[in-house]
Image 1: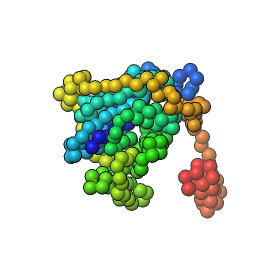
Image 2 (image 1 turned 90 degrees about the vertical axis):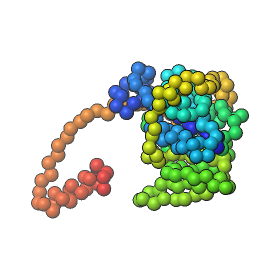
Image 3 (image 1 turned 120 degrees about the vertical axis):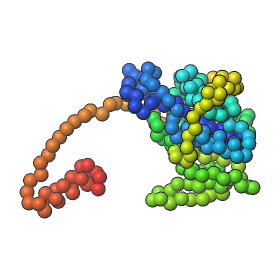
Image 4 (image 1 turned 135 degrees about the vertical axis):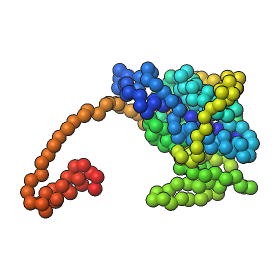
Length: 256
């Protein structure tokens, strides 16, 4: 099978939040890493390749520093990479990111496209399903298991309250992979050396710009929450205090 894995570079979870001058995004001088859900998507793609043969291609969009996630994917076993390289890709919403990916791979014939369930920075969980709609492919989300069948694939989806759904799907298809579907592998020393010689195709903004439109979503402002401390004493009879507490938990704190 020929599988495309969409990957993203995100700020490290323990990196200090450094906002740019306009307060709309994070500065470039923080530490970045592979989006964790995308790492699970890559791992599942590599396991499918080991079972059934084929090719795994990794793709990302972003400035030059984003190439790090592609190199990591190649080191772990991906066959080649595609980098939509331009700082302007950082500002795209999920709709335009999906359009850019679709335009970059329009001449490829993939059987499957994997994305992580969502990104650790925006958390939209939209790119995969929007990409499926653009391509006109069937899709399924929150995937916990994939089995190849004669007519396509059979997937196991995680639902709420501990329930699962099993779905038969034709190929080609787009799947968003749930974190924890498998155990992540480490890149070997040999893999790291081999990654340097694997193909990496760069795609400029001009090559896909005609497919893009205005962002459907826009971040107006990012800010660091202010730490505050407030203590309120509830007085009265036990029954009265209990009633006041329940009302505050329901109407003010909103945990009930």
